Amino acid sequence: MIRTTSLLAATAATLLLGACSSTPQASSPAGLSITVPTVAHPDGETPQWWYRSGAAQAAGNGAMNGKARNVILFLGDGMSLTTVAAARIFEGQRKGASGEENLLSWEHFPATAFSKTYNVDSQTPDSAGTMTAITTGVKTHMGAIGVSAGKRPDCADSLQKGLLSWLQLADSAGMGTGIVTTARLTHATPAATYAHSPERNWENDADLSEEAKAAGCKDIAQQLLTTSRFGRGPQVILGGGRGEFTTVEERDPEYDDKVGQRLDGRSLVSEWQQANPQGAYVWNADQLKAAANAPAIFGLFEPDHMQYEYERANDAGGEPSLAELTRTAIANLSREKQGYVLMIEGARIDHANHSGNAYRALTDTVAMSDAVRVATEMTRDEDTLIIVTADHSHTLNFVGYPARGNPILGKVKDKGGEDGLGALDLARDGGGQPYTTLSYANGPGFTGATNQQPAGAKRYPHNPSSFDPATGRPDLTAVDTEHPDYMQEALVPGKSESHGGEDVGIWARGPGSKAIRGTLEQNAIYHMIVQATPRLRERLCQAGTCDANGVPVELPAPAKFERNTPAP
Image (cartoon, helix red, strand yellow):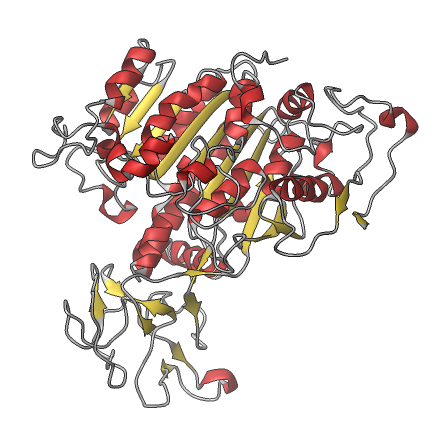
């Protein structure tokens, strides 16, 4: 049985295009029809089915009409719609306004959609499976990096399941490529742009089991270097995670008490420098500025994740902001004659939400808004597609009936609740206690006593391993809930707050952005990118993955895009 998406029929001339045709004719219709087999869910969902169904969504929305020269994907890790709304108000209130009327930079973009984020094996997803869907067009299992669904962490099972990312595709097509993140560069989101692993935690060689090594799996850090087999490799690589790339014999340049984590004796930083003799390796903001004209830049600004925006100014070595990293990346890649693709992650939004600390989550969201603003100022709407989205949600809640302009991190003040018949005063719960506008459904903000902090309101950082039951709610009357270290209350105790399973937003501007509308499966974002970028879809068609309309519909084999296969 066959399901057909809604379409505007292709002309007879268009139908004569061969499977390897480079670009659809200019008169191509707004939407193209792609037949997608009806399958039993979830058992019938093969990698090819996911790829084709994502292609059908994008083509049906008209993504093939895009003529993007460059693509920038901004990924707010864990940036739920509630996080966006709260950050919007937080930024507005920082400017002295009531806040609700404010918009973050990407909220001015004309195209919006929702993204369905589930993994093939989980209603509520993780960053590895979700980012793999975004970068490869195929949904996969929780924990998977760049491989189709299988067994976690079965190395042997994964070896023939590698997927081609749009970053590797662009490299193969002769475009410039870049990766920017505030997490470790080996963490799930950036790793999904270049690595293939059934287990997201195999970040350096010490993380792999002997069984996995014997079966042929490689750690994620070394895969960043070997991804150059598709072309030149990323020209801009900026983030955290020095420890993943250096050995236990190498002392960290910023912290005297730290060394690298690798046990195999390989200094991947040195290997990158040998492979890029004209390139610049940097680890602080001053070095980054000095490397502005280098043909390639490799920046590792922390042994682990980069600092939260709130703490960045206190970094002894001098750490660049996400906006500064974005500026450097775009300036470098803008020299590319064939255009570029760039992934930029605001990673620590997710980490702050996991820690139950809304202040850091909101400040890092505002920092990403600053970075998106830089990107819009440095690029042209006519040739650069910019997409802003999240990989998954979190359990942050926005509750009560706070009055207009009430501090978003404060306690709720209202005029008698929904009826609004009283004087402005602290709102009270059923037990007579005040409560905050923001809270979490679960996590370390649970108010019972733990092995680290007494009963009552909790302060960041708080990583308990045991909890006592809560006996009612604490009295927050005298508690400064707007303090950066205040942790919002959580209903269900947990060492770490969990992801949420609801949809996240997609915002877009530039060529092809009109196709981003409605409610989309997350893997369709990949297809929006490749269909809206002629050089990417031409490369896919050259490898024989396109249908008669020039739409890439067949799952590409990564080996066909390595250097021994010439790009058009």
